[in-house]
Image 1 (cartoon, rainbow, N blue to C red):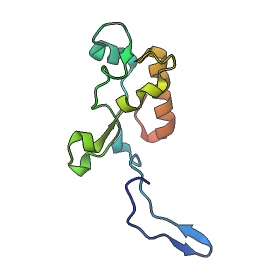
Image 2: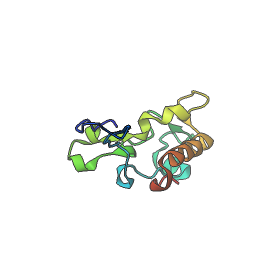
Image 3: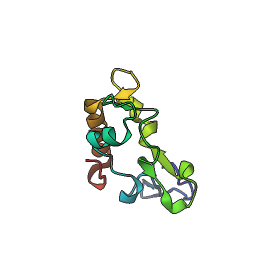
Image 4: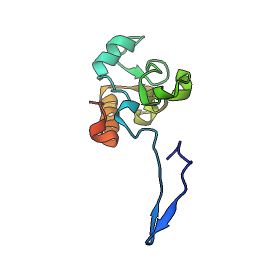
Length: 118
């Protein structure tokens, strides 16, 4: 409930009710994650068939976004480039196809049926 702090919690019949809102609470607030082959063909600058987590993932591919805020892109978007290093299993700074596929699976399992990550 990162961005909601404007409601007062109440207790009714020993049940606590809290109004909350989560950044990624709706289907329009995250992007699909492209397949590895699409990423490699489009963004693999050194043609090593790896995706560098710092330089070869466009910032605009969002793990979460809030375009409705009308803010500059850096203030309304969380890029997958910020999180991709977590799937770099050998810590070489690059994601191979297996690591990329795992990242997509993990994002999809988190976002469930709302996500368009596959």
